[in-house]
Length: 254
Ligand code: SAH
Image (cartoon, rainbow, N blue to C red; front, side, top):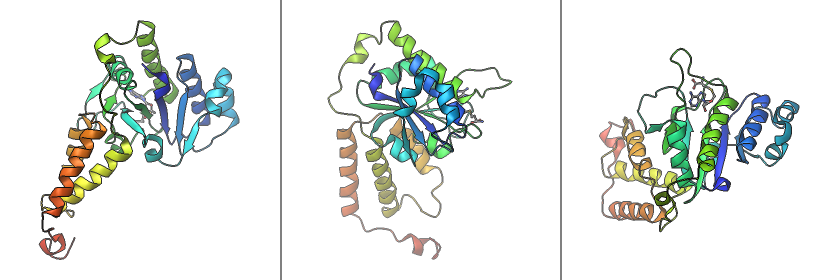
């Protein structure tokens, strides 16, 4: 595992006390990279108090305005959530997920996303992920405090290291770097545009096509070379087709 390539991302945390508690949870488990997406109140005394001896983690925390900025350079993104979502996604418990994340941290930057105290992560945010992580709980109450959820996830990463790390095979180096989120998002825009031009996706009625394709491609953990090949196929397809005029097809409504 490369702990320097694993970041904890808090999406719109509302309570500064939780941010401090997250910093403490991270540092006790040997993780130090914290990114805050549009925190309601930060920096704040309550965060400093709750961090105790982990103020260095708070001070070096990166504050950004959007999730895009927080994960643009990441090759593997994990979203934590308690509830089942409408479109099932690959999901692992913290122990199995730790193995995946540790292996991916040898290939590129890994982000672990944690959601808002009241609403968690949105469906769109969860669709950005390669993997979902759910902490098993009682059926009666499945939602942990934010910092406690972070603690459990970081603990499993730490335990994996303490027990000797990953088996040899997972340490093998891949020949190409993982595709970054920034490039993957460009690919999805390109894919959607091409599918519309060839008449496969009606922009006025896209249904679940993009979420399903995101789920397909996100399962593959594509590298930059693979992504470039797919982009190249799309570009050639576009060059050779007469784009469909959907406004005509939809009776002037698109
Ligand atoms: N009410 C929200 C939960 C918010 S808890 C909801 O139902 O989605 C704040 C954050 O802690 C969540 O977004 C998630 O990142 C994490 N979390 C809480 N309980 C969790 C669980 N059982 N498994 C995984 N993550 C959890």
